[in-house]
Image 1 (cartoon, helix red, strand yellow):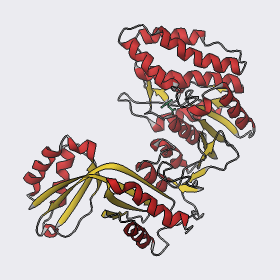
Image 2: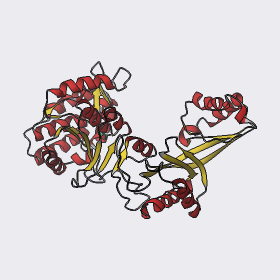
Image 3: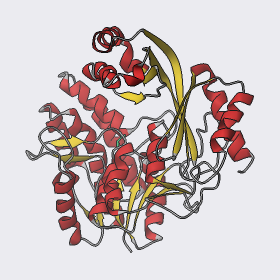
Length: 439
Ligand code: ASP
């Protein structure tokens, strides 16, 4: 078996954490390809090395003295080196970094050094080969990730290496300029490596024991989800449930490789399995609930809208022209509603309104703000009678006024729009009916 193991920043924040990681890797000889993040926070008041690097580079770019800041970053690594008694010196690396900062190598280069240096330490600690991601993770001239080129290069490189450390988060374009993924992007690197070596599993080690059924800031101690499909995860992640970077599922999905979210501080926990498809039932009728505040909607009314060919297109055109992405479009016979993100919309609302009038000539148009969307997701809903009924009766009992209902065609999710002030109450009532009653 071949396993790719990715460790997040909090799993590698100190020598103590490195030791736990070392034990986890040594406990299973299939754990052969390791993708580290940069050192994260050691406690809640601490700063991630990636953030320190961005701040340090800002000074460099402004032509200010950054030596103190760089020394603090170096100290983070020195602490790990001495705690692990490694015979490695990063003096040369820091000289190069200092020079490149002075030469304004770019903030992506700067941020990438967090994972690069941690990769060097990890490789020394484990006795694994170090592979600089700039040589195997490819971006095009516009900074877009080139999945196929990367896959070929990475597969070729790792074919010859039975064990390797490949730092997360960055790669390079064809000119050799370092490019990073968006924040949290080491998850993507792990997935890319797993695809390239056709791993049996991609283990993503973090500081929680998996995906939770609901947001712990709203629900006390929600249980972990045992198994979730890629599609269910996409739905929940889109609505704000975050453990894994949103784009991390795409590379492994191509090869049907499962992801196992694990907890470095509780390695005995089974964690959450993210799979393409499964015969396993979820613990409850629903797999999870997630939601987001900050939406508004535009209600449009026009008599006999249903028989006017092209009406919906014209309305949506007005949003497209202003480059606003649309969340949901529930409709009636003479009405349609367009849900959009409030922040994105607010600046351009009047331009959109006048364009809707110009293109579609509605009888009435009205904007409502401060709405929230809640996604109730579950592969089990399709085959369970009465799920929607239970959701809406729970909401009615909690006196939540439902403003919008949208059931995806896959019957995998039901999206509910509520007023922002009802958001937490709505989530709690749905959670109670499915999880507390164990059905
Ligand atoms: N170190 C980067 C960040 O803080 C990438 C990662 O940890 O995945 O965003």
